Length: 286
Image 1 (cartoon, rainbow, N blue to C red):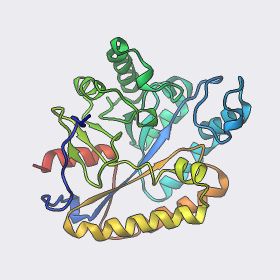
Image 2 (cartoon, rainbow, N blue to C red):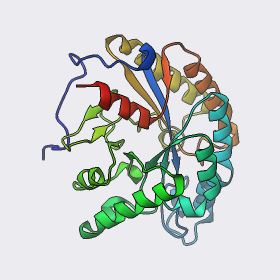
Image 3 (cartoon, rainbow, N blue to C red):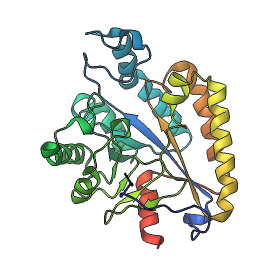
């Protein structure tokens, strides 16, 4: 089956992208702020207990993010002048209102990230998906004061009809398709794809590949250095995907701090949000 959502476009030979101020790399942090239902399997650090009800080992590990890890990561982002692009489960608006208030005070960007990470969009009956998406978007708008412009599904998941339904709701870009180092237009009017990452993602780095903090920092520096070099042919996007229950662990914080200092300390870096990247590209690219 051919992917009808977007066309093939090799990065060589494209018209160069120009970022504000002549920046080479647009850098943003995608901060996953999620709510998990107790008694339902989800992201786990120990699969051996993930089917148990309750599952204190894994649920408590995930819950650490909202209770402690988020606040540690927030302070680190503040230290380096990074505004988060929050990938927000709409249930967070009711469950963790203090998080919403903290993000509003910092003028963070808010993207719709499903209802809860205990449910994938593909699990929603097709006839109910429009109502499901509408509730998510409107809940986030009410809580944050901003209608979400971006979408990333839990586990980067959506159905074939999701993009069109989201466009109808005013969403203008997706992060789900991690196919490029630059934004590109989708074959749904008014909808873009903005780069995200499944590899520069703390869940994969730490819990799936068992890399260490220093290895994580090295990866971030290497990614940045290569994109900075590539940008001689046109601006690039560097996305860093974080989860407070992973990167927010105390022993990992210094490695995030070091990596952010390295990236933000370079000339020619636009430290921004995914909202601003999408808006700039939409205004300026053919």
